[in-house]
Image (tube, rainbow, N blue to C red; front, side, top):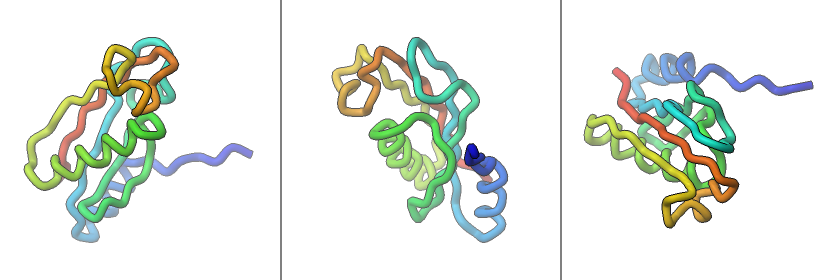
Length: 107
């Protein structure tokens, strides 16, 4: 049986109703091999809780850290990870893919 992930937007709405500050990360574009397709989302709250997925491994760790800054400062950012980056192996995209992720605060 396949486990279905909860909808990050529904989780974000619930967390905001609970008074949490929330950011959402959305995969905007992918090139080559990437773990998640465009439209995949990850929601992060001000306590560092997260649900959903935009990639895997260290890419998500980086996105979560950047989302914390977006929550604090309110300014959206565009992140890009890929094999051309010197950090590609560190963030888990050594398979030849690139991914662009938009992170914004909700509410």
